[in-house]
Length: 192
Image (cartoon, rainbow, N blue to C red; front, side, top):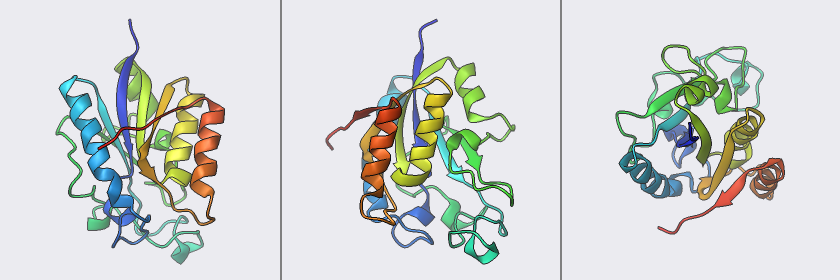
């Protein structure tokens, strides 16, 4: 059986966009690019996955409970919703991560669907061998997701113009991209 491609959108959520609780500079600028990829994958009948942070109100991930980040993407909140302009089809498979109060879960491979099936297993059931990855944030959840995808044996193409980073240090995103490429990811960009 030939390996199938899938689109994997990482954490394109309100709290990571301007005006959110943990905004990534220009995080909303990737939505139009992601939508073009969604349209292509949907038209080709290829699977589309979207990860989301889905934190409980109290978690060690938040600085209110000893963690590094301000509260964000709390389960059921507006901030946890996908960006309103993101054109996810009804057939998109949503996987949630960070659901335990004791977990940070940056990687989409720590996520599970509504039935509790992990991302890697869902991908394998569909015969997916290559992932095209975009989303937020380059230097955290995108990086950890891509590195774990490679460790799981998936081929990965990073959609470089469909990612943005936190950049706590000025070069964090560029260093993250370089780490993903060194680990085996390919880079691609499209023009919109």
